Image (cartoon, rainbow, N blue to C red; front, side):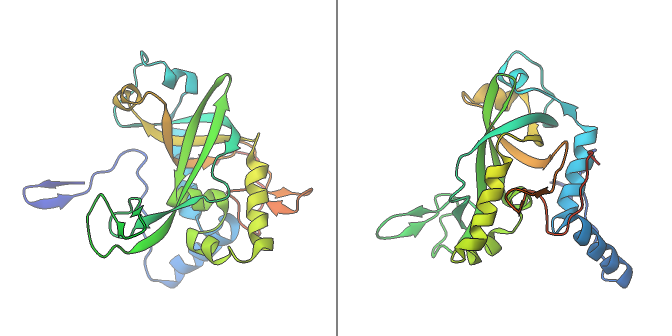
Length: 238
């Protein structure tokens, strides 16, 4: 997004996803069909599947090697195994509703160091962190709002409403536990400057997919993260 000759311009790349949602019966029927087979985050999941096919694969070891030449502002994907969900018990943070940055809470006041607006309106947003590994190299991944909603299986607002219903929340926690030691394909944006500036590599995930998707865990009786109720089995990347 930029300004050219005084006018706002939107630029796209080969993996840009644009959602057109016209108000007509045909579009509504298609959306209902997609939601039935892929869940509420169907557009994000279709975009991730398409983007993964078009981007380059990279290994974590290559990212850690600062001598490797990475393309500027480019998306890559890697296949890793989840070792740990670091903040499973609290996968959200309290954010400023204006700029979405984390708020600062003290005994006397609530403030936002980014936009300095007062009073600060608070909202909850997902920030799910996990440790992943491929071969002998490990790193931390962070999944924010839409991607985390897709992984956990519900929006952050739905999650907060269910906190008092322990028997339901336990199903989501079990689903997160089931993701450990499972392989996932993660999509992210990275370039040489980001790798050089960071001593410890931390990646923000923009999309994900399971190479082989088993939707239902018959032992635990719960859905795996990233799946929706009623979703059918799919054993290949779209």
